[in-house]
Length: 234
Image 1 (cartoon, rainbow, N blue to C red):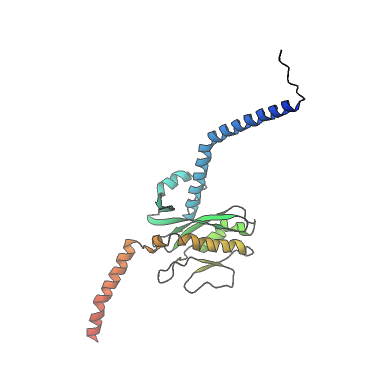
Image 2: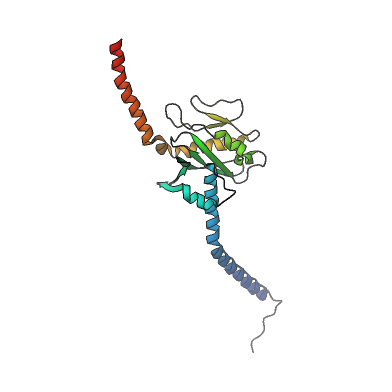
């Protein structure tokens, strides 16, 4: 007759713990598999909302996912993402931003007008910046400072927008906004994130819309015709 294993023995304790661990691991794996589609969907919805906020769209009411599908088209440029949106009959280009703040990663999306130069809207997120200081980058107060700013200088060179402490001046030809008071490191992180992220799309941003190129061509042609006429009149 087999000897019954004592519940007070070390072997029993080890076997019991092993069985419990295996059961818990199996349950966690099953739960993870069941929840994975929902987690993926929630993550995608959160990304869609961030992009819509950068496009100055209201995501607090209605169906953000449906609105996103209606106005945003997802594209890729090699290994980079690009979002083309149509807002009130106008084309907007949305580019992702990624950088480092004081306590962790920061990110966002910047929406540009069809000229690929004027900032239509912007949105930021962070892992754990200081409440009341660096965390304020997500607020409308900070975001609105970028609206209408230009990322290129008068010659069309990509410069980004400088995020500087009050009293400091950007380089000639570069537009700037005031950094959030008391959040120097986070503000510097936003400044660097903008420049570094936009530089990844430098080739795309330098390729201006056909309408703008046609306009420039028309101006050049007109100048070529007018110039000799003026000379003759003199």
